[in-house]
Length: 183
Image 1 (cartoon, rainbow, N blue to C red):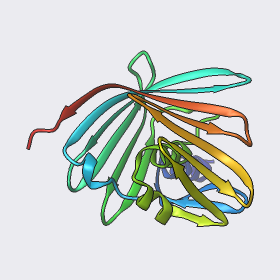
Image 2: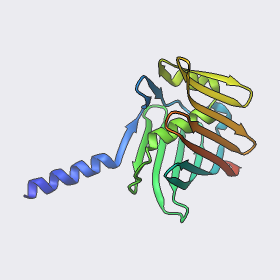
Image 3: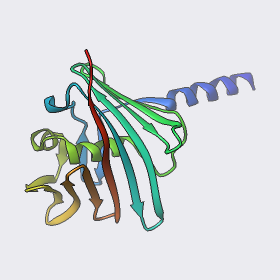
């Protein structure tokens, strides 16, 4: 019995933190998470992320800081409770520490969608693997698989929208505050 408890505790600890590099977007498409672009280095942001689907709407806050060596992102419930911490280091890739269960939220996918909507097209295109391709016209990006549009991403002022056309949900990211990091 004691051995079973120890194995269970070790399994739970192993699930709490994970290194993520590839995110499955569809059956035929993966996305390799990309490092932060140069234009975001030295910046901090507080953003509201809202996911809306036929089942309802869920909201969380993202606090993100970018410096030359790392990216640090914390997901917070609207009440301020920490849901997850995510970090990127050049040698280690992305590491995710989930602090509370978040049914229906795949943190790796949230980060991939965040990058698809905010990172420069050159980085996003490098990250797409498989049969999907990225097209951009003005402030709108579309990820396509053959002739099917999978995702539509738009940017208007302080708001970025990610619409999953196949699974019929939307993620809206609203910039609430932006600041320069002090060295």
